Image (cartoon, rainbow, N blue to C red):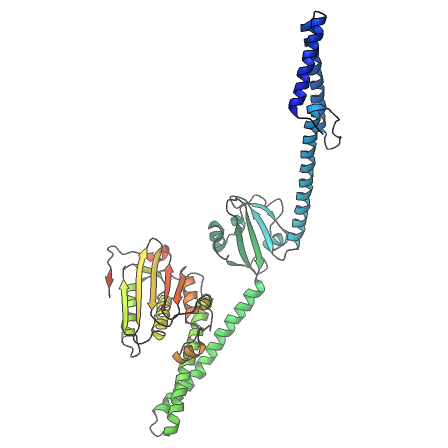
Length: 438
């Protein structure tokens, strides 16, 4: 068991007193004290040399056997060294296992530095993206992958799901990217996934839906024409009039579904970004208000609040489809004594259009899936009202092409609010803005 430091110092002081006592006996106290102190310094220097020699060669030499404070110091240093060796071996083992695991990953992994320079990548990323070891280390990832969507994604810190990028020069593949960033860290991990099969299946599905819808349109037009002729025929038996009217309603519903499928296919097949034509949103919403007020089955109150006369830069048919779908949904699901209000305003975050109703509301569990194709909260009620189940899917895709988002808030039994948020880049203010309430 090692002694505390003060006991070692007490022993040295005691030795000095003994040397002085001997010096007084021979009448040479100064000489005896000097010789004792010189011996102490020589002993300490020898131990210091041995300790320094062991520190330099500690990987091949055993710790020196020393007494006193030096023995304690050597023991502490040796424990720290052994602990360091243990953690180093453990870190190396974990690093080797991590490299084996990343090499066996079905996805690519790229480690990026503070300025998005490449620090490391696994073999899958090298194979998919054509990265070269050593040559591409230190190069910014957005200098190697120059697609605008990808550059914008990594520049924004990887917020939200990453884009799907088509790489025709890399085997005509599609890749999905996901940038992982930890708070307070400068390093980022970019995960690359090959989604070529999913992209091709999705393309096949879109083509099939579009082609089938086009093929259905012609025979459906013929059927509707014959039904209209039968319904207007004065000699038609009274027993057949109600079945013919029901066939007319169902053919109209099918026509609406086919039209919505064609619209959805057109949006999906279009470019990733919509045009930037200046659209008078206030005038567009005012026209829709007149159409709603002309309906016999409208709610008792329909309000339009125009708090800005700014223009939205986009595609007019798509904006018309967005607002019409949201307004008609609110009208359909609001009772005759209810109220629908539409509000348009702009602020520092962009342009916003909110459609609020006092209808039946939507249970919270259904809200995340509302924009899926053919998804209905109440299938029986939707069919009775003539809904196709594609309106909100069309809204979602059209908003995405405008860089906008759809926010849904609802409470069952109290109503819903659907809000379209357009980015500032899509808002064009007029020279003399004015506001009004209709």
